Every structure is written in C-alpha cells, then in structure tokens.
Length: 139
Image 1 (cartoon, rainbow, N blue to C red):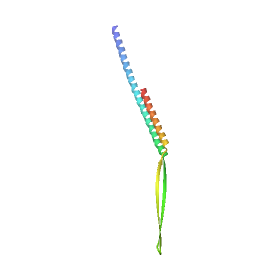
Image 2: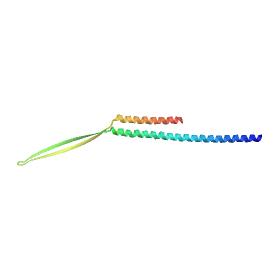
Image 3: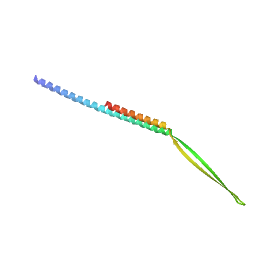
Image 4: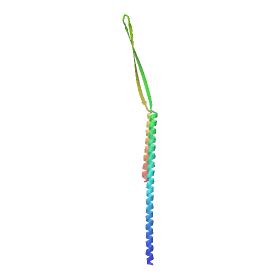
C-alpha cells in the first residue's frame, strides 16, 4: 500500500508542476499580447495625434496664406518742363517730360485668425498631453 501512496503523490506533484508551468506560460503569453496591444494602441495614438497636428498645421498655413491680402499702390508723377529760347530769327522750344513710377506693396494679415489658430493648436496639444497623462495613470 505504501508503494501506491508514493506513486500517487508523485503523480499529483508532477501534474501540479505541469499545470503551474502551463499557467505561467499562458500568463506570460497573455502579458506579451497585452504589451503588443499597448504598443499598437500607442502607435495608433501617436500616429493620429501627429496626423491631426500636421493636418491642422497644414490648414493653419493654408488659412493664413488664404486670408493674407496684398495691396499694391502705384503712384505716377509726371513733371513737364518747357524751355523756350528766342533768338532774333528762331524760336526753339524744348519740352522735357520726366515720369516717376513708385510701386508700394503692402501685405496685411488678419491677426484674429492667426491668434485663433494658435489657440486651436494649443488646445489640441493640451488634449493630447492630458490623454497621455491619463494613460500613464491607468498603467
């Protein structure tokens, strides 16, 4: 009878060790899958964060250049000088015309739109930072 007790004890110990090893391997596999999922989520999170950042950044520049107006002012000044020389037999008239053209280009931008765009970018950045902080608190 004592032989059977040893065999049964050995079988229980072997079964428990095998089950524990399998559970540990399963737990390790589960942790690796969770790590992979976390990395995947972080990848998509940062991908979309940067996508939206560059999307708004691009539209910021587009909007900024779209509302930039260029005003060109052209001023033309004409100076006419007439000189009359009279001699006893001949009268000579010389006319000199000088034209000066000045072109001034002024670029104006609506500042409210620029400030509003910066505020939008700051809000997006703060939301991204608060999401990152929330994710770190859950870890």
